[in-house]
Image 1 (tube, helix red, strand yellow):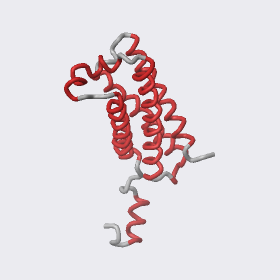
Image 2 (cartoon, rainbow, N blue to C red):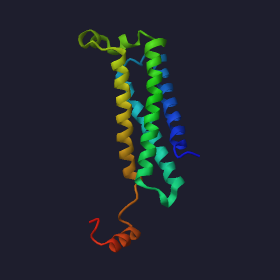
Image 3 (cartoon, helix red, strand yellow):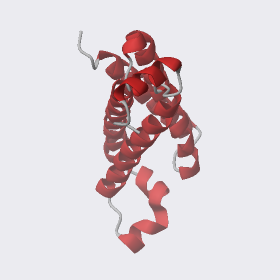
Image 4 (cartoon, rainbow, N blue to C red):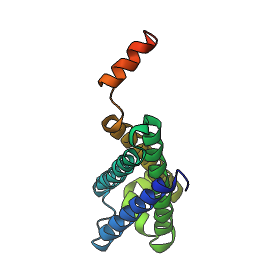
Length: 161
């Protein structure tokens, strides 16, 4: 089994949650209000938290900072790619009038196109994945304040200090 199987599973779940949330907002015609996109961070944050938690459970004492950070970032990036693909399909083909409601007055002033909106969605997702992975790893990283770690540091001497 690939080491990226678990992040892919969580990424599909996160992307499904993001798409479902977007479609529920579309049902109530609230999907053009940018403030509702703040909840996307909660959905992605929960997914990244869970993938890092399960990575720590799966690896046990062999868990490293790199393992958790890699799985968090990979799952966030894949979820972003999947959601951005759906967003491009929705904004370009399913509901072409969506961008008029979303960027309204900016379109004439700043010459905003569908490509720039999709690019913004992707960059926002990638940066959210990186930031949340780094933040959650502070909760899961191995502590340097345990007796076992202090013993290892004493053996190494002043190399790390």
